[in-house]
Length: 389
Image (cartoon, rainbow, N blue to C red):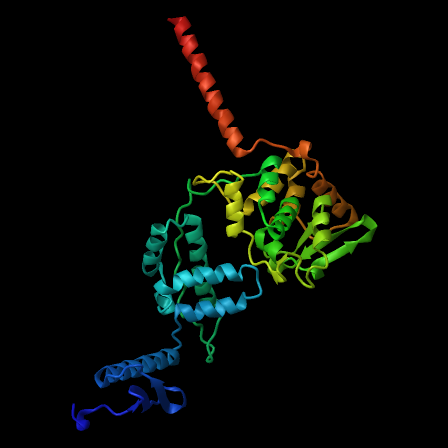
């Protein structure tokens, strides 16, 4: 290639071509970066491509066209203080390769279809995929209704596309409330920090991230009742409503054992806050405890919450009280409790401490009994038929 036909804006340094070219769309009016290649021809191709990319990006921003990734990152900044932020970030990491570069106006069922097919191949549950699609819907809605550019125009100037969800009918995993024996076997196989957190969860009904995020400054002492409660702010609960967590005798012992180990968080590991409970250690303990591993049954931390709810029901606790203890969203329930109401919650929570009173058959035992009863019915019918004959 003659010098006369060479494209200007390239300079060779140490055998590598570097771009040094005026570009009104680049920051400062200059594009300066390495091509990381030693071939002049390849370097010119890279320069042409980079100039086109920078111009396209500049024109896109002039027209206030935002990509899904830009919108999603803004949403992630807004929810960074919430317990769900880590899960949302993981969802977005899986979505970006499929729709991250798309303008938000082009995100719809058709462009999301490849992601859904990818999720199905990985055998993700419909509920998991729907959770990710829910994040997409939230980002699009905020882009259309909340966020504005420098000129006051919405990020998405049209109505956001309605993102369809997958059907979960007949595909949702069933909860597995633990018996006392199963709880003992499982917890003995957990490392201490997880065992403490799990014991607290199964005695309070707290969700996984409510346990992980639990802070000492949320504790409120009630000396007249000889106990304390934790008040979880609306930003830290799934329902978006403030929640009062009362402590029974077992939960109080856990809190007492954790006190003084960390200045801010209740549940930590090696001086650092616990990010999640459903870890590899939990999964190993679940298998070692010989708990069910077949598809269609929950194997995670949420079973502790189901166990708490089941034991409350077995103890005869009224539905409204159970909802309050579990932190369910309910317009009839307030978090502004009187002393008498708090005492009622504490008594209800204490009712599950006695093992014999709240022991219930677990799911597997119920199935086994059902199978045996079906067999007995068949034998009875068979005997009756023989008599008729």
